[in-house]
Image 1 (cartoon, rainbow, N blue to C red):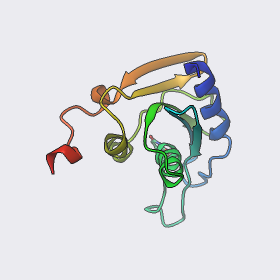
Image 2: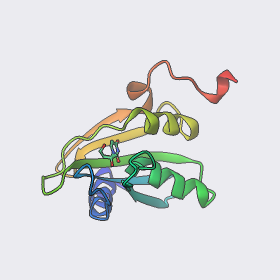
Image 3: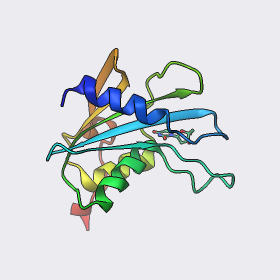
Length: 133
Ligand code: THU
């Protein structure tokens, strides 16, 4: 699947965002090496801390379906009613990516018209991983 197609799926997933408190909606689309795609959106809660980011929604959906081999993820986000712009994964999501993905895992940010590609190693250098334990 192309980067463009994966970002398009992230943009569709963003429409499902439940984010009444921040007013900031995020979508993600995760491509597994077997070709399956899992999408996610951010899901907020009135008590705030249970809020789940779009990236973790997608990754946890995939892992809970038995998938652990991931190729790339597309992420888009922005304030409600604004065109999606670059939304970089939060630290918690980067650490969850580190749990399941290799350093060359591709992270696509921006919009389907303007995709910027990073690796997990670039976004989470000097990471603490399970190899340390
Ligand atoms: N959010 C994500 O879903 N992913 C990110 O990478 C950054 C932030 C969500 C969490 C919260 O619902 C809203 O964006 C504002 O922080």
